[in-house]
Length: 214
Image 1 (tube, rainbow, N blue to C red):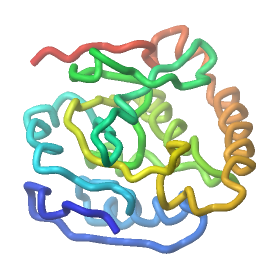
Image 2: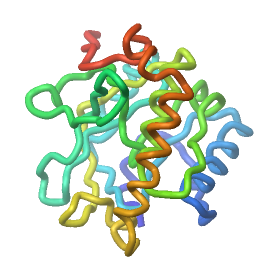
Image 3: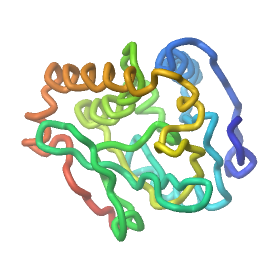
Image 4: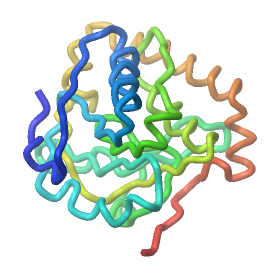
């Protein structure tokens, strides 16, 4: 169960879905938000929003469409600070100290917690793949390919994870790593079909970090 919803500084409605697979549930919720013409906060059930998570977001909203956040383990150590892309789009190394403290455009932010502007809600959906993980990589890349922007916001939330750094909910899946391999292949095929290598070469999808100074 998601914790810290009371730290969301705006009026909001909570919508949930138990549809399978995960991406189907996510897309159903995005369809609901699109029908209402609203921005959306996309959050997993093993996330804890902290008082500081959204404290600097509002003045940044004009500068991007998809916003991701610093992920900390429950003990406070870094789990994710935005992701980079290699020339072919894979793998997706974590950006670590000291860059995690800078607001910057990045190729990919995790969907465990995202703020999505209406522009993103209307244009983006997760691919329906049979395995586990990587759907949010395609989601972020698709944002760049469609002329949207992905921004990493250096404010933390807590992500409950297993010893293998899998989200606590997905960590209960007994054949997770087999399914992870399935989606790794799906992601590779998606990247080829969507011209990711070419988009990275042309910097349509950024590599490294493009610091936002406002």
